Image (cartoon, one colour):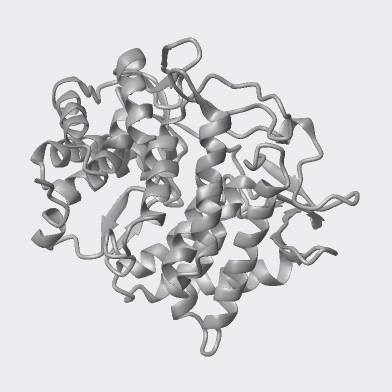
Length: 402
């Protein structure tokens, strides 16, 4: 699957950010502020881990000769960070190739001004060519004159997911010495369980959203990462809570699997609801699409590694079969507009995260546990693995292929 996706990207969209497989051309978009080659940078570690060395060398050569970081346009700090910084940094730690270190240091310097704010909270948009930053909030003088605005929408899905994820992962990457991150994570988990975790009449555990004091019984596909997150955080919580967290992680992952199994395509919608008699299904047309997202498969991988329950591999194989049947087209993989339709309509986009995350997590789900073991590596939001011991030369040679 990875080689097919990569070969078609190379053939029809080389150097562009993503492939449009139906029209067989490239897509650039404006999310990355003029940066190019998102699929190349995002694929580096996946290609290397899978042993696709010829393809990896092609990607490395493009980065060395063609990755221009002096772009002039407004870029999402978050997306550039998780995809470009994460991809380059992971490739460096996996291979030790200096070109990746050089590029990530250069890019990091361009991103640093985004953190120069009165609150320390980085601004969301940056112009990489001119260091121009744009605020994504309105001024508010309620906190010592600092411009802060608080939303009345609370979710562990989009725009909130990575905050919770990085609390526990920061703690793990510190070799469990960052007590502040640990405390914040488990306090957040307590609040999430108290206020957001719900049980449906049919017995499905889900994480609702909170809007202005009212629960919205909706769970987004992005929130399905939480099964894996809660699983990897189970060992270091309050005394006697390990099994509770593992059970909660398993229940949420089961619910997310149900969102897949209850559709005609066996792929999950962008968001699903628990109201009006429906459970784990999308009752709004605007929520029925699937864009090759990885979060459900991500949780399968983590739960397999933590429990070795064979159902997680069975569920992963169901996803493989559904992707092959409904998303594979003649020139790559495409998202679909309605997971409940018996005849699918494709959206003509092979997202870069499909190569970085979805296919990598599937590969790891069916690999031995000693490939990127969870006690030594942590995955960022874009599934780029980073070692706990960043000064270890062993980490840079652990995955050399003949």
